[in-house]
Image (cartoon, rainbow over all chains, first blue to last red; front, side, top):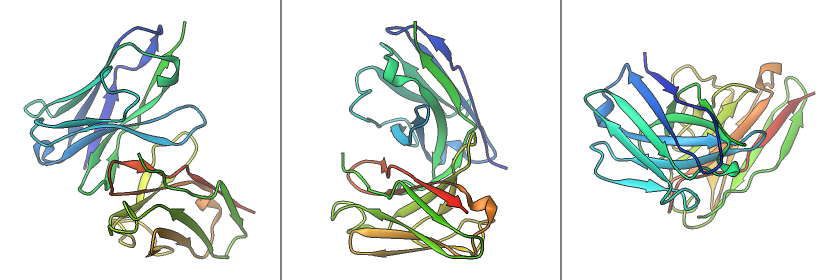
Length: 118
Length: 108
């Protein structure tokens, strides 16, 4: 059974940093693109970043480029999102998602809430 | 980044059929067969309903079907049930990953 379990969310002051983690199990982690997708309270889904199977390439939505860094550890079957210079508009539930190819977001974690507020 | 346009809301009565549209451009839906649909109940993570326009993952009811014409994809739900009341999102392969704005389905 595929499982994705996020952790690391919480209340952070604007300008602060937080690191999200996602523990994967039930599939060959190193064979898939992995993605972070977020959802602000009461809003729709927004793709944030993804990372290639071997970690050699990453892409970001414009609003987070230069502030967020996606990474992975295939030996540990883990995905990460380092979030710096947080803004109020980054407040959202962040989902760890497996991309099964061609933006087919097949498996989702339960999400972790990040709140950027003073 | 391109945007995918969905109606904000649709409604239907139990047993009826409804369709939700997702309009993109020649850079995404118009060129690629890689359109996916997601269902999200309140407080829950989204789940994949359809991929590659009309393919259903294991465990998804055959009441959910998809199609595409030109730059517009559609999700059809037949035999509406109360449990179908949820938010629905589309996405398409294209220049960069983007979701439609979401459609709230109300079962009357």
